Image (cartoon, rainbow, N blue to C red; front, top):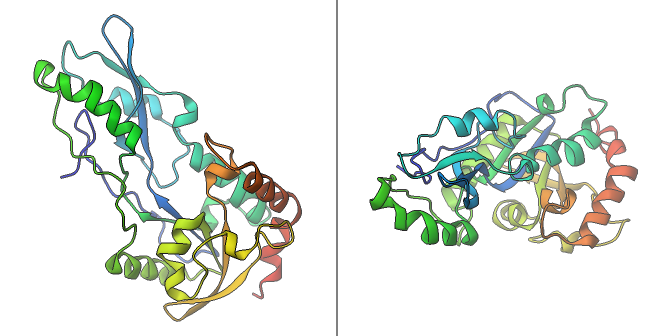
Length: 265
């Protein structure tokens, strides 16, 4: 079984409510709950380690302290505390504030109106996490009895044929009026199999062209494709492109609210 450092299993994080939804959102891969690892003397060993699967897809960070407190740390190996709030749930918060609320703000509870999905439903280890684990966790494993972990990196192929078919089945179950892709990867690895462009830039990099609806048929279901930026760009989370952030801000203010009304019932 795949597992995080400190032993928590890596679980698939998927949509809970499986009923029809007007909007289907496709992201890249599940994030994780992040903790600060502190030595017994109070010094920080690692400022942020992924230690548990998100409790729900596109989690907004609620309950972080309780989740982290429930993870056992062997005596002498220090303790875990919640990492910075900017590292727990920022994508989920940005999804609500910069995507769903502008689009669905007048259509009831926004999360109730959206089916959420990722190309990879499990968390993956990025290079910075791997370097921190090799530097700090691995040398302490034998000394303190820290559990082994199996935290795989982001694979070269983000959706194989089986995963493409599985996502297609989720879309058919959701029967959405709009399919939102977040950044380039969902276009490249999923919707391009149904005729879309493989990059967001191919749809246009101007205020006039960004955030427009496009026809697509997925598994026989005719719907609208809405290619948008990754939440990192929309929320200006860490490294981001000012150009794409500005284009999305324009979309939020000037186009999003009218899009759902433009789709025939």
